[in-house]
Image (cartoon, rainbow, N blue to C red; front, side, top):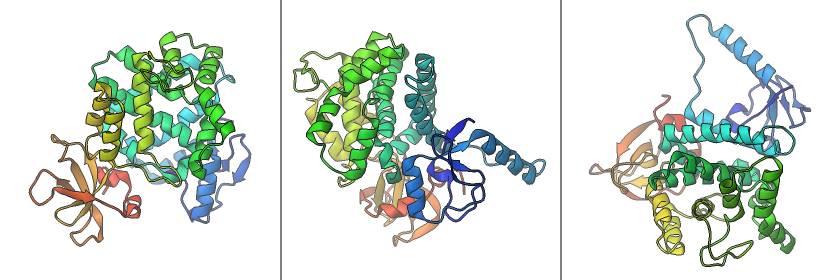
Length: 378
């Protein structure tokens, strides 16, 4: 039996399941045609991790196609569907470390797919990293690695790094937390400060990650050094070795790591706004050119940001514009702030539609599927 990890949009509350839902060992949790009864049950399933037999999924898809009839096709996958699958794919890849052969080749294949997906539409990629799903906090370590890899790739591209060096940085970002994935998820969910014992584990995780990667066949010293030093700081003050000289790849990865931590969801801590995160990152890096590259890529109002327009409408940023202060947005309310069925694109560089503040009620955004914001569905 081959299992595929399910993501939130594949499970609908009150709708009969089209296939069985299982745990990671393949044990059946909910049979086909059973119903997820509540939001609480859905959240509990997603937190523990749920899977489906690929054969059952394919059988259901074939049945759907047959019911659609000749000449009719199912909705094609969007980039948002693909991004949802990337988290599940990375989860399986990292869990396979030490248990399945060819880890290096499979990681390089995943990294290549990831880089191509980011390059295909960087605005969608940034949106995914900004609008994080609070129901997946238990997977914080995993998703943080994915988002840090995204920020690192965008930064390295803007800095003009060659493709091979970008790939090394991405592979290091994807694998830097393999020794603390579950601990990071637990801390993100609980919103607690780590205990002394947990701090020991956190300080040890760069070396433990390198040891596990070497054991799995990784021999690329640049990749390994980047993982080993990604919490070190030039001049000292980092961990675990307190180095004063740090390789540039590790400096870059640390900046991406810290930046994403500043704007990420965690229980008991509100994410910083892009403006405040950018200010802190630039100051803490002493005006580093690499920090500036991240800030310029995300912009003042990155895709996924929730903003108030001068028109009175509330909107979600969808595309970076020619000016950092004037992105393209999709209005999700009318001028009185009442949610609307159809979203409307707005150019915030146009008079009357400039951004005057940030939106506050994030529940309004949660009700709108991203495909509608980007004009992929009506």
